[in-house]
Image: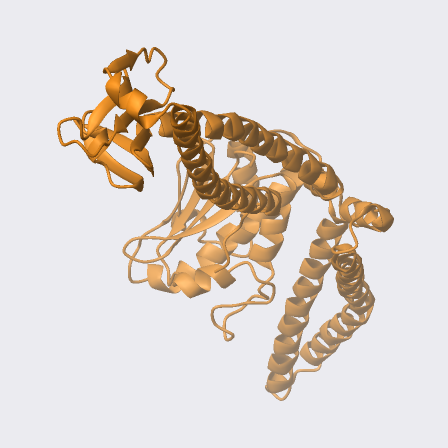
Length: 462
């Protein structure tokens, strides 16, 4: 099953992740490239320093430098200066390897370093040095690696902070652009959510929707949706109108047939002699019952059609005690034993704001349906149909044949019946659900224990 997600936020997240990835790759490339270039530059500085010192000292004659050589120490007060040591090599072993000058704080053993660049650790401090040998002079220039790392960090920070600020500004800009571009779609969504009145208003909104203000990528979807909804609405209207017109047009012929059957039955009864017309009378009685059955079906179709076309119901405070009494009074002529089969908790019933006429039809259909499906079983198991109210819910509980889980989902479908051999048309519960939905009420079904069906009418608006 497909999961719901926000296209806008998914787009923002995708672009943001792409930006962060590109920024990270660019920063990594910048870091390694900068480290390499800075190492080369600082090594050149060491080499240049050594060559400069060598050129200066080479101007002094070697004999004079050797005779006057004394260890001279210069101050190294700044941490980022280069440490330097100058050593004189002569033919005399006594003065061989003689330090002429060195900076303060320079590491020991610089004169023993190999010629060229080298890196080593002394007393926990990492050094980088360059050794230059020129004739009898050896110049060693060295600096701490930590100073290079500190310089690299400062340079990267000066680059990283603007980079992060730029990334934040880009994300904000992405949010603003995406929100601006999705504004037409959000406007359509909000408008569709507001259209909760009925199908006609929703269709009118879709029909008046300006497609030119919608992105080209979803224009075909919107256009096809409008066309589909329009065709669906027309199909539903045709179906409703057909039911209404067919039911209306069939009322007169059925009434005429019923009249002729009753007249024929009356004539046959008057001419009955020695039981000769008994069979004809039974046939006419069966025909009259069938006509009555189809008349009731047409009345249900007419009520269903009128209910679907009705925009609103007249809501008024109604006492459920009076309403249920009127319902049972209407059902008693058809089911004389209904009062003895109903367990009505009259004290639990309250006053509810609803349509008296609509609820009369709803309760009559539900109670009659419960009575029909539990009547045969009640002859062996005298469990009555329970009617009571709890809070904002009215319960009609029977202990008849009941419905399984699959049948519960089909209970309110039009023309669906549990058993095709039973009387009924499969319209009662469908009509009841439509009438309740028009009042923002809910119709629910639960299986009774150990058997049967519980119908729950929830009067709490949803």
